[in-house]
Length: 126
Image (cartoon, rainbow, N blue to C red):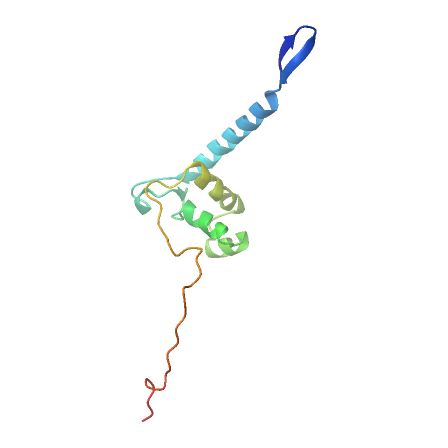
């Protein structure tokens, strides 16, 4: 605890211990996450994968962001466990993809219109 005293009263009191503990805890968690992920140019061109697998971390993070449940992911990738699934979004936030992000100008926009065509001229009976 740091204090700045002015005259006979306390003017400012800054408690850094809780913030420091939180940062230290998160750094330990990040180090543990890094140990669970590998990046090798011989495996998927160096994309980060869970150690011992060829499952990209960003794939799992994307699946979670699109609404997939842990059970659905485990069904498709039984070599993963719940802990690895939980760290995928954390890893991607800490180590974002390099390079230019993909542009999807149509994302989030409504279709501009719909067209329908009669099938009478296409279908013929023999």
